[in-house]
Structures are given as structure tokens and as C-alpha cells.
Length: 552
Image (cartoon, rainbow, N blue to C red):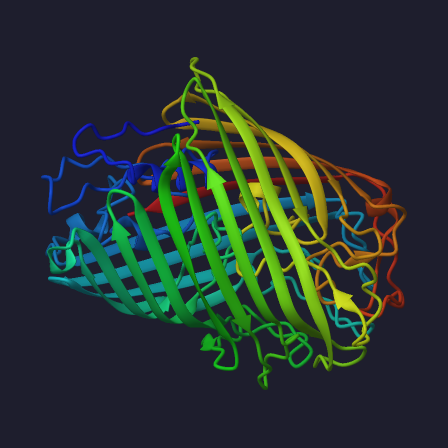
């Protein structure tokens, strides 16, 4: 693992929290976050050092109003080239990724054979502009996400039997729209209390806690964003608290029962706030509660409603979480343990696009990780991990008497636990029972690798495989297979930082299919086989990607 050199001036215990979060979440990229600045009221700020930015549009994280810059300034940067004033920040990022998928794990779709290969070129272009006026900031982020060269069935969403394939989907395409647009106020020492405080209002992206439930996706081509109010209070020595009240932003055009086959690349439509849905919550992080063990506790609430262009399952969930973790350190053991509960109600529909039967929802998930960082050349780290997310005991039963037990990962990211998404995305935090291990090593400060292996079963063999909805419109959305063993996934990932403006990344995954993955069928949400659709192909799946990230 690539690690940044910590500051030696003004180093406080609270710095370990953010460093730990970033190291645990992005080890392959060497993304140890820059330690927190010391209390500005008590010490003079040292000369900052920075870590490498992730392989995604992330300019908005490069200037934290309370903590300073976390990421390294691009060696080729538009701000300096254009001679812009210090109060104005401007940046451009462009990511290009080629993906190839052979012998897909999803069922063969009507008129399309998945035994062949799929491919896709993902393009993500990002413009960031921010104006600072003392403690006030106004920021705008414009993001374009699109695909090129897709095979006919890549990312397609079937509309039951009447199916017209279209290559791009809502996870890969969202052409020219505002990812963020907000105003904020921040004070590093509010009322001389020693506390940093930030207030932010408008459209924004969020990364909270472990990022398993609230995240701006790294690998995915499009982002999660929300419009509303967020407040943040920081004790530089010990704790941090975030709270928010928002409505999710819907990416348009989109696939659903109202618009089953939209043209996502040639039919531009502005994203819109979903004012029928509210997403709110808070997370409290505390440093060094005992022998360098850090802790966080959070509660999220999702209250979802239907709109004319967005039929939903009317999820009404409370999701409490608790996490304990230690920072990976050379020559020492570390661990991470997170538990996530979920309860409330959800609706399912036996027919049509609008859900109409309310079920009680009770689900849970956990992540456990134990590792050791060797004090050796190449900085190797080996760690074991285990993930569990509950499934339903009988997903074919849409009646009100049934209890829905399928865990919903809300707006979280999955790539750092389960592997690349994109046109692969084999596993999510839903109906999964999976042990595994990873090995990180870095031959140089600019070159890092990760090798991983994960065995995967369904948490409930009577449930489906394919996410928190598991209907015919969600891939892979497979059910009625033999047993519960999905397979054995191997992966190898590498990153090379040419400089602070240009980064290269590549990865390969191989899925040795188990009995369930070889025999499962694509089904309707009532468990019936879709007409004209065959079981999954028996051959093992191979996925490869190669990408470049240019920032200036």
C-alpha cells in the first residue's frame, strides 16, 4: 500500500480518523487521506503534503474549508495556466475506461446471446468552479457521463417480454448535468470555541463513514447526489459530527415502467430533485476510544414516495450503524467491524410498475476485517474479510403477511468490498454471505497492486441474486438456481501514478461459477420465468478494464 508521509508539526489524534477512513476504503489506489489540520486556534499550520486523488471526478474534495486540501495539486492545472485569482478555483478532469465482459453471469435476454462478449467505453468529464469570499463559498460542478462502443446487450434493461435492448443505462450515462451546486459557510474556530463548523445548502455529493451506505461512487460512471442542508461540527482533537436533511436527485432519462426504453445518450433531460422522497441522518465519529481504536455511530432515514416519472417501492427505512476500526500501521495488526441494521416497511407489486402491497422490512448486514501490515519493502498488507447481508426467506410472496428481509445498501458504494461495478458489478451488499482475503503491495510510491479472492453464497437460497430490488428490470436479477453457492471470484488490480495530473488503472476479475450461477433464471418479480429467456451460460465470467484519469 502506498502511504503518505504524516506531518510532524501539529499532529493530533483526530487526524487518525480521516486517515483511517481513506486508507481502509481505497487501499489499492494508495489513498491515505491527508491528516487533519491541527486546531487553528492553537497551532500554526505546517506546510501541507497531499495524497493522490482517486480514479474519479473528485475536484470538489481538493479544498476542504475546515481541514485544508486533502489531495495533491495537479502538476498541469488550469488555475495557474489561466492566471486566475486565489479566491477562484477551477479544475477539469477527464476519465476514459475500456471494459470487456465475457460469458456474462446474467441470463440470456430475448434475442440476445450472453455467451459472447460485452464491451463498453466509459467517458466521464468534470468541470469544477468555486468562488471563496472569506468564510463563504459558492461551488458548481458540471459532470458529463456517457458510453461509446457498447455491444447490443451491454447494460440493457429488459421490459419483461416486450424487450428492446439499448446499450447505455442510468449507472453509466447521465449527459451534461449539475452534479453539485451549493453555497456554504465555514469557520475553523467558531466563537473561539476551538471547534470547526460548516453549513452547506444546495445540490451536493456525500461520503459518510465507511461509505457502505452513503457515498459518491468512485468506479461507477455516474454519481449519487442530494439537494438539501448539511451541517458539520469538528473537534480537531477528538470527534466529528455530520447531520443532513436532503431529497435525492433523480438521474434522467431513466429506465423504469413509465419510460422502459429511453435514449440516454441522445435525449438530454435535466436531472431533478425527487421531492416525494426524503433522505436524512447523522453520523458521530470519535477518535481513540481505547488503544487507538476509533468508533462511529450513525442513523439514516429514507422515506420514499412515487412521482409521475419515478415509480418506487415506497421504502420507509430506519438504518442504524456502528463501526469500530484501527488504522493500518506497518508492523502492526489492525481491524474493522461494522454492523448495520434496517427496519421499516416496503412495497412490492405483483403486476405493473407501481408497488401496492406493504410488507414489514427487517434486515441486517455486517462487515468484519482483520489485517496485518508487514514492515517490509513494497509495504505488503494481508487482510481477511467477511461480509453478510440478509435476504428474504420467500421473495416470491408479495402478500402483506410476508416479511421482507433483503438488506438495502441505500446510496452506498460496493466496489471497494466486492469488486468493480461498471458492466460487471456481480455482487452488492444484498443477500450475500461471503468470506475473502486481499493482499495490497506497492513496489514504489507511484505503483500499487491488489490481489483478492472471495467465495460467495446467497444468504438465503430462497431469495434472488442481483441487488436490493431483484426484479426483472435489475441485472443480474437471477433466481430459481440450484443451491446457494454463486462462485469464487479472483481479482487483480493495479494503479500507476504518472504524475499528479495523469493516472493509469487496470483490473481483471474471474468468476468461477457455482451451481446457482450456472442454473439460475431471469424471472419476474413473482418468480415466473420470462418467456424466451434462457438460464445463465455455464462458462466462467472474465472481466477486464483499463482506464486513464487526466486532471488539470
